[in-house]
Length: 274
Ligand SMILES: [Cu+2]
Image (cartoon, rainbow, N blue to C red):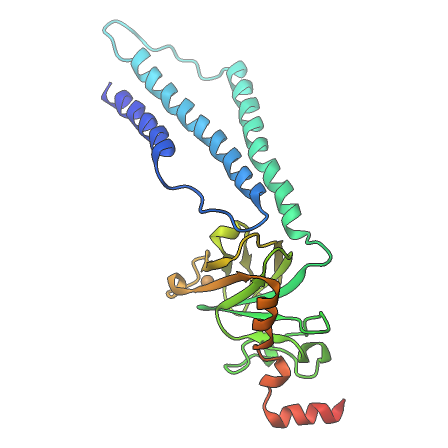
């Protein structure tokens, strides 16, 4: 009986806590309201199942408690009950997964005119790269990576020479413009997460993952790494500053191009070759 009362109290306290607690999503700063809706659908379904299962257990404990003279009946199988439970579970799982797949396909198919920015992660810092005037990112390869060349760009690739390198954990983005984030890792799994943007994704070594978003309000938002990536994981942070387009372009102009970061001798040799 004590167990049944404890279960009922846990259910009541959990539901109350959900409705009266001050903690909820931080105000959104991107176009991804759909992700909030998806989380709500999951919360409602799992919440209903949590309440129903625990109340059912409490009811069964009380209803079938030990009484002198009563004996349990052995009933190992019940096709009717099993098919019913299977059907209900199937509907619940489909209702939780289907909206996620729909939103995911939206999230990785960016509008054609989206601005491109590469996010480069490593233990335990963030860097960023914009494609420059030609609109194309240059080729990178681990062969070209070193302490001074964290991006690993090929100095012979003409598309890479005007790439704008942001060697700092602070990324600026223009307000109201769709932006595609190309995610690349130098070492282990990381995850680019700005809570106010909702959308987040892993950086997987050896491949480039991507998603897009449109910032919908100005401000300074914290970037967190949301994948346990080693001893300094907690400190792998940065900031996204969302500002109007003029301020964004002003900031971008202060960042060096790849060509400008090359030693003078390499730059001279390359311009001779061209
Ligand atoms: Cu990380």
